[in-house]
Length: 295
Image (cartoon, rainbow, N blue to C red; front, side, top):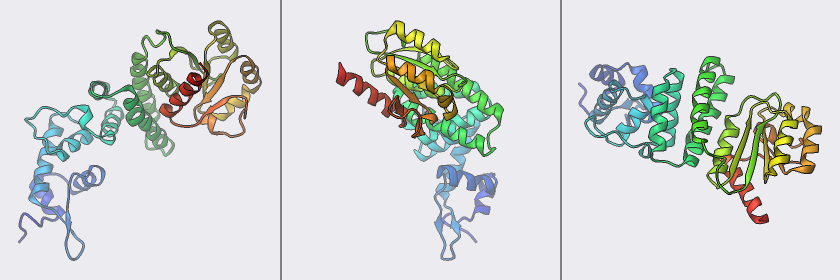
């Protein structure tokens, strides 16, 4: 006969009404359960684990995503207490909650998660700890066939709209000007928008030309504005190679930086453009320092 301190997974499942497979998933992904080991190596669960599962189920019934529910349980929160502020949840929990909502095409829930985060965190935190790591994971999942094209498009659309909302008014002020554009043929601009937001947080004024911008159009805008930097973006090195000659010409008149995955190719326009190969926040700091040092 088992007492409350030595429940096996099957008994925990019977008491909680949760399938063993789901219990194991909650333990593995979120650390919800905290079993001990028997002398023979079996996982043994306690009455505290039963209570954690019960509270987890209540949070799920209230409409929370699994990652958020587990985060609340781990902090000892009860159902009748006020919801935890976004700052109290870990970046991993927030990313997983956001991923869960976007995977289910639940735009209102995704917006609610973003609202909670922005109420308590800076734009840098939003970008560095949640949005950009999530996009990286989403891209990896898509390549492995674990995320559908529809999910990728939906998530990108929701996040692009939200980031552009944050960008409203980013051309105002008296700071240095940056002209941002995707290279010809490049339509993935979330990373570039994020970079613009990181620059804006450091006092820059942003002129955003968007996806698939001809180099001649970028050059025309730069001639008029005389920016401190022209920042071009691509996730594909071929885009840089195809535009190599116009880029070299542009770089004779303007200070040019190239970001995105394409910038990691050591052979691309070496010595002609500044390659932004680090994370968005670090690179925004870098070019801000460069411009400040020359002022």
